[in-house]
Length: 124
Image 1: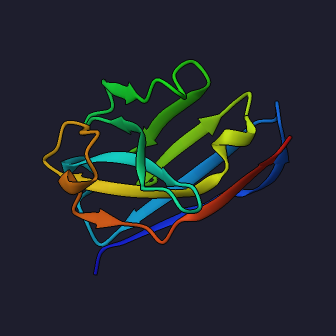
Image 2: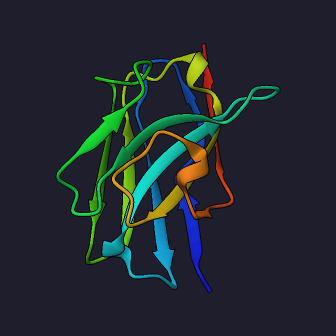
């Protein structure tokens, strides 16, 4: 079956960097656009970034543009989220998602599969 497994979360200080990974199995990775979403306590899940199937296009929420970078490695079936200059407001559970034949949508409803999430906590 399809599995998306996130890793790399943790507790960091404001200004630090962190890289999240999401490894996919049970699917044809090249057929999926990949996205990262996050959900803070008591808030709805929000789009962070996405990358197209071939990896040529990436999209970012305004709140992370210039600080976060998404990338994908087709050989490893893995998508990465590099987060620099972290702020306390970046604290959330981060979810990886896969969208079959997608182009990198910013709507959670477009995604077919989800990971279990990884916690990122940024202390001020």
